[in-house]
Amino acid sequence: MEVVIQPVEVLAQLAANAIERVLQERPTPVLGLATGSSPLPIYDELARRHADRGLSFARARGFTLDEYVGLPADHPESYRSVIDRELVSRVDFAPGAVQGPDGAADDLRAACAAYEEAIAAAGGVELQILGIGTDGHIAFNEPGSSLASRTRIKTLTDQTRADNARFFDGDLEAVPRHCLTQGLGTIMSARHLVLIATGTGKAEAVHQLVEGPVSALWPATIMQHHPHATVLVDDAAASRLQLGDYFRTVYANKPAWQIP
Image (tube, helix red, strand yellow):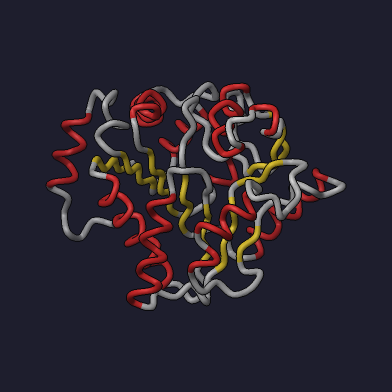
């Protein structure tokens, strides 16, 4: 696991650099796309590169991490709407190239199975963007999730719903109680994981992710077992790291040949 501690704008550039390499080097690049506030600087940087330098997503496919159950697809806070607004509409993905779990399906179990099959049929995710919840969840794999889980329905914790109420004008009751989410096993199948976290509110989760024991109590800790995981954090999110100074030294002295 590589831990990079830098200002937010630098973190966004580093993540965008990794995504750009995938887009340029792979004939049919497959990206895993996260929603929420953490990845927004990355999407802004990618949109800028598309507008200014012609960075193209035309050959790429994308799979989102999760979706609320019960929200119409055109609801402004459905993750289909969010990813369209924040990234897809700002670059040149082909129509239908980005898809997510169907939270409005009549048969949710079948929808989850179909989503797993779609990811596999596309060749698997090359680079997965991730955020992290204050309770250590990635995607919507709440504490207690199986470390081997696949796409499935999950019940959201009160903490997650409270954290996400800001997207629903502060109305907690408007936040759905259930979601469809890629499982931890699904996420771990991606070839490169890039997690971004900023702010003091994420400091404890980042500390557990990087330095804590691997445990279902902090689901993101499964990333410690991934062969190519990059954790991008600002000073505030890194404030609980006992090895923070060491991570800064490692990054400052990173060999030029090392895989980013």
